[in-house]
Length: 101
Image (cartoon, rainbow, N blue to C red; front, side):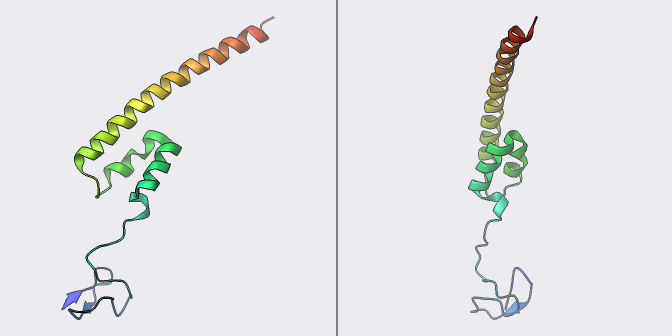
C-alpha cells in the first residue's frame, strides 16, 4: 500500500490517482507558482532585490545558483542606483537654473 502525498489516504500499489482527492500519485509534484522562473523574473523586474527571498527559499535551485543570482542582482542594483542618483542631479540642475530668479 502507498499513501497519497496530499491527503495521506492509503492507496493500492498500482493506482495512478487518489480515490479521495483525485490528485496524481506520481513522484513528481508541480512547482508552486512563486518558484517558477517566470515569476522570479517578473518579481525582479517589478521589485528588484526585494525578490531575493523567493530565490533563497526556492528548493529547486542549488546553493551556487542562489549565490550567483544574489551577486548579479546586487551589482545590477548598485549600478542602477548610481544612474538614478546622477539622473536626479541632472534634473535638479536643469530645473534649478529655470526657476531661480
